[in-house]
Amino acid sequence: MPQKFLCRRNGFMPITSLNSSSNSGRDPLSLIDLRSDTVTLPTPAMRRAMAEAEVGDDVYGEDPTVNRLEARAAEVFGRESAIFVPSGSMGNAIAIKLHTRPGQEIICEERGHVFNYEMAMLSWFSGCVVRPVAAPDGILTWDLVRAKLSAKIYYLAQTGLVSLENTHNMAGGAVMPEAVLNRICAGAHQAGIPVHLDGARVFNASVALGVPVDQLTAKCDSVMFCLSKGLGAPVGSMLVGSKSFIAEARAVRKALGGGMRQAGVLAAAGLIALDEGPKRLHEDHENARFLAEGLAQIPGISIDPQAVASNILIADIAGTGMTSAEFSGKLAEQRVRANGVNPQTMRFVTHLDVSRQQCERALRVMEQVCAARASA
Image 1 (tube, rainbow, N blue to C red):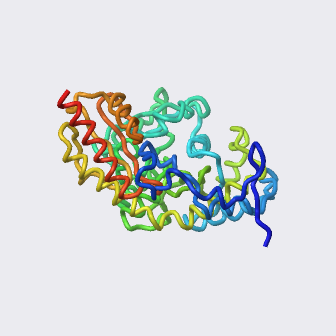
Image 2 (image 1 turned 60 degrees about the horizontal axis):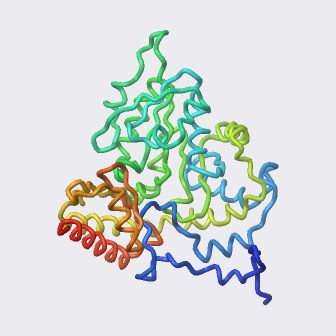
């Protein structure tokens, strides 16, 4: 059978040579990247599928691999339709545009991704403002949401949307229980307000709760989820909803510059991520809890391991006498990458390219860094 090749800048290389990675999670001395689950590299199976993908022009609806991915995503979430988008931020922007009109308010938790990390697109593109709600553990409840609903007075910006996040990134991967989510949806719908779920890591929530994603998200009017985080695909997210909603989403995606052509090379990896990725997310959760338990033993670092519900943990390092920038720099010198959230807190994310052995080494490095600072 002839060997398949992929192009590179200075020639060609066999696709089998692309299947290894210096950060595969198998080499205990490799770089350990705990910055985010967005840094995962495509698996060998994904690379093969990408190289062999059947493609067409997706703007014409003619890419068979994209069509299969969208159909599969809709099936998994029990929805009528789905659309493939380049990023989760674009998926959220499209959903917000369709659910709201200019001059309305959007309720979300104060640390929500749509509010803090999406370039104010809900204002730029949709003409809306945020009504942030503080939830101590990151989990909104209907009582918290209800208290922020705008009164039906003509001179007040009206509540146009409730945006939820599950898992909640900056609340340390907090998981919203099914009953809590359903209660918010019921209350919002009774008030005539739609609910969008930023489910970038909703499969992590599903695994943590032991509830299928279709059941967990059934009451939401739309759901965005990422293929390119814990599920391991190199690029892409999905937006799911009703047939009419997704038909409108295609026009908005085009307006945002998200009309992709032979996107099947990306969708091929997404199909594998969607079907295979959720099966191993429990490993990331176990590694995150392991990290948290180890961090709690290091003098100067404060974290509650019992609060770690998925693959994200946030630790207070104020007691070490270092800022997060200093701490990150010291870790980087030992080939461990992690990011600060603010000057006194660090965020660590486990994923498929971080093994238990590497978690152990990361903890040793952090212990050494903190001990060296304490004795300086």
